Length: 256
Image (tube, rainbow, N blue to C red; front, side, top):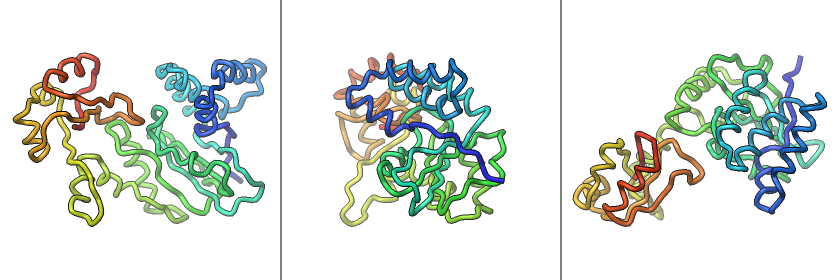
């Protein structure tokens, strides 16, 4: 037997449509037509999830994604050639647009076939796995993906093909750890990053900015620990900007 992959337009092509000025509500309506006439597969549902998020309706998009992934978790992106030179299986997490490493952008229009498997705790992996030459973990280090990465680690011990980046090594790439690993590496300039709880950020002033960031001072860059693609990212020019930033953010932990 073979693993069944649902075809989809995919994140890369939909995002390129949006940036090129395509009316994404028109794309939404076209996809909904397939749902209405019962010709839609699970890939259409994932495309609807992406379009909703591109339209700024994150909650709706994530709800659609959750519903689709209950039923199906294996998807094939468009391939530029009929006979690919390499077959890549990406292991992704159930999360918002921009969370998983956007490998589709790298492989679009190439001779590489990309299949994405969403690893969702509580659901078994497909058996057999889809045919592939190499696997890559695109799920990010994130407070919300810990269970997914643990699940990938469990299966990685017996994975039938090479895996490019093992999940157990990804934790060292978290922003506040990576800066320590690369500090002093020849030719590398990387800013010191610290993880602060909400009450610690609220108390931030010139003196403790220097303590957290090795003598640095305002302005600083701040972002929630679980944000990706620039969501919640802001520049704080002085102590006076901290309370205004926190009034707009509900998160409990941040990187500075």
